Amino acid sequence: NSDGEIHDWVLVTTAPSWGAEQTRATYQLRPAIEERWRQYKSFWDVARTTSCKFSLVLSQALFVLLAYTLLQAHLFLRGRQEMNRRTRPRILETLGPTVKVVAVYYQQRFCFLLLPEFAEILLTLTAAARQKLLKKMRLLKRDLYHLLENARPP
Image 1: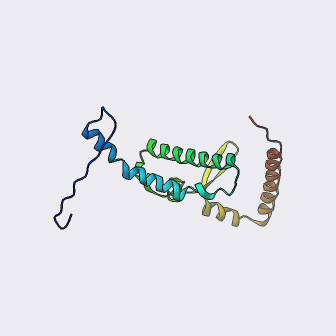
Image 2: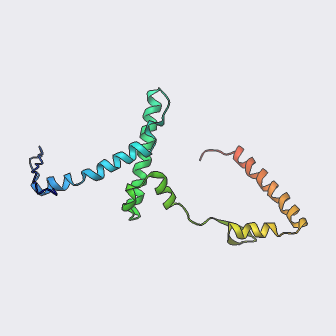
């Protein structure tokens, strides 16, 4: 340490085939394991379950662990392992889309518009065009809700 004192420490394992290098390499995983446990315990709402029913508590814990594992696998596959120390909200914020657009389809053509561009187009329509568009949007909304009411599982 800064005072010049030397403290020895020893790693011991019961694995008969492990050498010193493998034992030390395994021990070096400890900080990452502790950090992941801290993330899981503190930021993934494991204790949020208010039910006293064992099956619901178990389901909550399993689903949270599965979601955590899938997110870690996603980070690994995308080469973003440096993000695994961040909190869940920060990871989702970083991985989420950064630009939101509106896709407009008309007669087998489409375009992508930024939200301000789309809003400007809507706000500059003439009164007659706005009324026509409003009528069409209400019909589309009604049809979409009707489709959702009759949705069947695959």
